[in-house]
Length: 352
Image 1 (cartoon, rainbow, N blue to C red):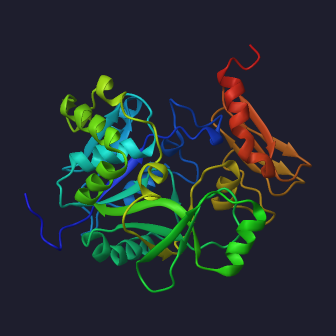
Image 2: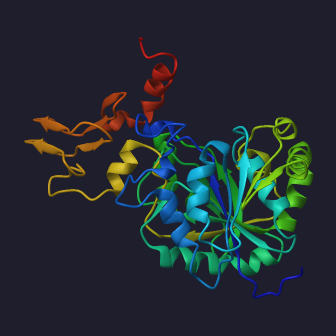
Image 3: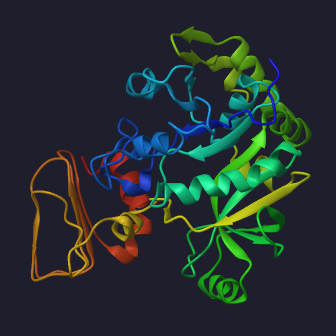
């Protein structure tokens, strides 16, 4: 069915990540987007709230791992028209987007957004989406660049042409070393790559056909042979296994014919490490983010979280202490990017 130029944007929420940098709270069974890391609501709840209850958005398509079927079906069931595409195996972001592009109507605008980000200013988020709609309807892939406030080395960057609204992307920059990040911040015109994209389903299909045809073919066959279960579709495992596992940046974005960016400041965090959880969390007057039922005595800058025992920390600064019934993590905040090493050790048997 054809849509008019004022048809709403359909969100595509990617919920396939495991969030191993937030071990031991985040696991394959309880990934970070289903955890209340920054308050009473999960990151998935926050994402769904940003794209629900507003005239500019249609019901969402959620792409997730089959292990999350029960949890996500419960969250999506109250939303008429919501769809859930279940992947039988992890294949990264590009195949997930290919599935959504094929499941949607060809002329629908699709807003691809991760399920595990925090946005402090949802109104600014929606205003940025509105700025990108014209370019997306004109055949561009529009991405959204976060205006940096420090020289981060954990994000990719987008270098853009000066201008207002959606402007052409000059190039994508890999995660830089600190001197390069400092130089880009001083120069201006560089933005953090948030992994949020707006384009029509037709544009996505065309770009996949041009740059990742095997992926598009595998996604199409997986959908065609998939099984429906209520609002969910379980894509066929044998067909989906033939898809290359690639991120959307490598598969499409760095090669796409026309890419634009809308710069935005919206209080964004990728919540990708315990350091970023500390940055985004509510803190006391000496910088402790301790949650409920924990305490810090004569210490500052600490992050305490637990799904099991209560935590008391004495005379320590700038630590991350995370406890579950199965494991305890203690690290300096400036070493938080290394948590994957501990998660890998634990997954291999953890000394048992």
